[in-house]
Length: 337
Image 1: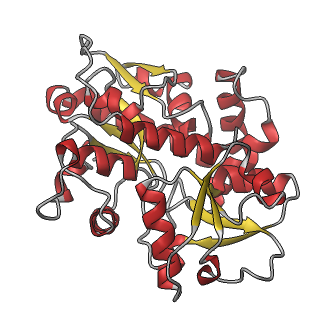
Image 2 (image 1 turned 60 degrees about the vertical axis):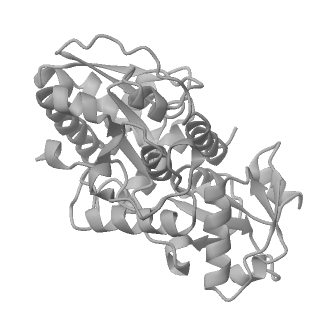
Image 3 (image 1 turned 120 degrees about the vertical axis):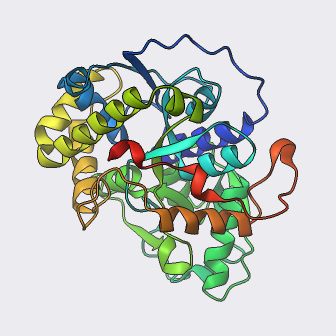
């Protein structure tokens, strides 16, 4: 199953569980911290495993447990205080938090957008986004997907109208056999895999067509945990940043550490190494200015405003918002200082 499919399902699972009743909170030991994954282990998670297995967490006096992925989204586990931290998509964080979930972004795993719109390479009838009007999109038809694609097409002068079908096979197969005309992918995983397999793609970057850049993937916590355990939160986040920094500076060893920690789930070393290379070379894990982990307030505000204007942010119970939320409370950089 391809990574974009996994990413979409994780995001949609988060949206679908907004109204879940509160799950029982676990007792919190001062020295123990738990973090929930958004999917099976991959290069987005590499800093967590390095920090754990290189002893960075122990050096900070905490015992970190990386929880296996479950059908309950990481955002829901964190918001209901079952997990202390979790891997969250920025859009999932925005939607859940606006609907009343106890979520706070605390670490930007990537400093810039990893997604892009892709189509089969060599198509002469699709040379720019407005050519997608009337074409068929392969995805899940979520409010976020529809808003994103429509605005990209409109920004290029089109009407923003397209058909959507739910993918029952891999996005690449659907593109190759003509079942769909375009889809969305995570470049640092799916795009890298396509390159390794020699598949040619055409692609449009969101930011080139009016979509604000974003921290696609975050580590989030709850206000309850952060307020009650500030020392443990700071220890976890600072050691986690050290783990990602190690991956940037030692990519070969980092690749082997990630695979060793997840032998059943990760068997393709070439893909893992190439994905990590893309994350490093593309200035995703560390910005061109050297920033690692810190959430950019202007970037968060911009994507929040975009989501609000697109109408995908709702109050509790799905009620319309009366005004744009104050996004300053949606994230915190204090624990990384």
